[in-house]
Image (cartoon, rainbow over all chains, first blue to last red; front, side):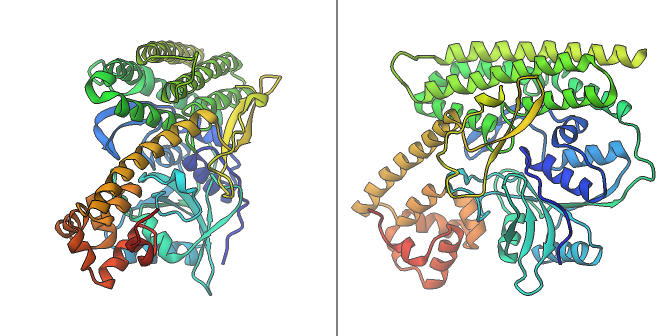
Length: 344
Length: 134
């Protein structure tokens, strides 16, 4: 049995999966739209939560949050389940997939995914895939993984393993699916306004004592970066830096830690809702994204030293601080502009 | 980023279905999704992390050859496994995993079943687990 959904690659796993689920129900939504409507952009740097021994830096929220936000926004009824028993988790998946005949989104860890390049394998438990069918004879599941160019299949054993990976943020077989759609799809414009305002609040209006989240977090990271070499030695400092570059550019961000996707969203929103001033903000977002790219480029030069190109951690931190301040200005002015437009 | 500036530095994705879609603007300022096979900056960051791990592994391998530690520690570090993770995936208690990782004699006297559990957790065969790499 296999449901009829066309595979569409996406930059970010969760956006792609949510878009796949929605497409099955007839809502054609692009990936940036999903990301923007779910108030995607975020930044967090938490030194005391370690991932593989490295302080956690993330440019996204927890896996599963985007789906929750978007279903709430549209008034879609959905269900998300966690399990203690592995067998029961697989049974429920089969039941929803084969009896109710709906596609199911699953949160998986990437370490045991068989089709992943060996070098990318890390203990990261936040990848999303969409399961659309099961081969009755072999028991293999057909899987739409947004990061691959075509449909892939996973054996039952592998799927069970990846759904229950351990480590930082252990998985409990999280799965989510849509139960019913609202009768009328709400108008896009108020949703866009709401989503943008929420994203701006998350990024630029965090209280001062929450110094690790939003644009506060970027400046916090830049401050900590200056001391890395003294506190943990050059090698570990470089390792930390490499991890940040990975988080910025590794599979799933669409370039520059989701900044380009958000730029694309602002552009699309301007086109669909007629709020043309968003086009200017899209261009500004692109500039910020380019700066993030430049940061990764400079960081890679620090990691791999070449003659004639020497950057220090201090210079990188200065650059990062500049980005942080620019982003804060950006989100504050976007908030004000959208609020003005709403009042009109 | 411009569409024509999207980097195509092939390194790790060779021979796999994995791609990195990137959003970039075309000449008219419109965003488009472009498939990229990798970027030098990112590849170098990944390569650096792999090198650091490899260095650590080499150090452990020296000690394995001297008989100071077991081969299991080498493969665990190489596969980014901590004691907790290895214990969870193999089903062997943590205390025993620690012992098997540090004591070469304890590792050498393991039965096939335990070895098989370790091998599966580390995604390799039992034969590979027993052989010292070149």
